[in-house]
Length: 107
Image (cartoon, rainbow, N blue to C red; front, top):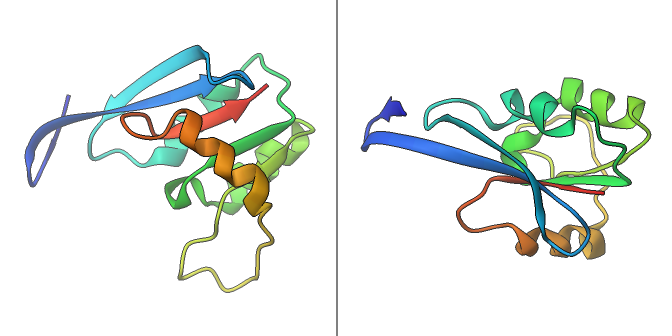
């Protein structure tokens, strides 16, 4: 549990297979950043693509995903200076896990 302006909260981060079946869940405090949970989600997997919302946008995380041989499918934050291409067709698959969970790793 983490403490935020709204009270106690928790974020659920999930790695799922191509059908949306969960293969790993990571819990973090509500105030923690999304990309801090990403290494634990990816550890031991060889995904084809890693999908996430703007909260997962960081150069370090993109580099880690690419080093693992996967494509980062993460829209850029508004304050990002460099233009980032996103496979929006692939990004639509994020709805398999979106809602109560924060991230997706498609294997």
